Image (tube, rainbow, N blue to C red):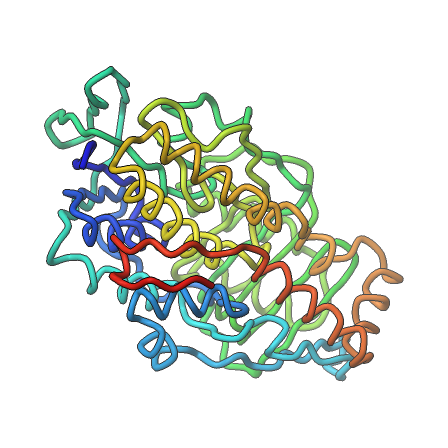
Length: 388
């Protein structure tokens, strides 16, 4: 086996999933994560269709994911007086299996911490790709050299920036922002819209969930106080319970704000560096990110095993096998759907949820997109000889 030492940047979903498979096929894996520890809780993520279930089953975690699942819950869309207008069913937002991102991350960490090295509270500062490996420097740790480096560090990937170029070359802003916050609101699962703005409380994404249309904003991604001011400005003058929510923003816990954007890269790999998950094919709130991360990790590890660690052959095969499937990430546009630009658009969106046939058709299309790949069997990973 060639290229046995692998550095993975990112310890959310894609990184630990890849670490699981690589450790099974004989690689020595190090996972580095900027955060000081695993992030608990977070928004709900979901899996859809047979392909996702098969990979979870081959990982041996399907039953545990089901045990920890939140269960999709219906969300009532209301008017300014709190009267019901429509219901967004749980199967639409929660897929077949829904689980909190933090719970899934913890489960993957539990399955890999004994075989893999985890380094929290650190981040890469440079990558030098050579014929014999990738020389890596860190913010805190000593420099090291690895055979391969994987960027599994999200839509704002640090690895992609260092190896491919600036984020502006690869991340397309889609005209909306979203925010997740714990505002201490005790309420049922309700959602309210005005043109270009949506707020939901008690739903699957977060205790409070916001989506709003905006021009591109200039702000520090780590400046939470600035995020609170941006959100307060965006929701000023809105009806329903929004003034109450805005008043709670200064004391908000775990508030996170980001753009709704899509990653567009020509190739997933540069030399000995390869991208996985949202770093390669992310689409914020697109509904497929977690499934793509899990399946992508299986395919990437499997192709490395099949190629005996030859990264050129493996990375090329990974992209050939996966790019068509990953196109589903570019199909969706969560912003205009969740926060339509006009009152008419809001009424039309709500109307869809009152028509079971239309909703069923949308769910069938989602299932087709989620299963649109023929999974290879990689005996070095699974020890079996099956095909799906």
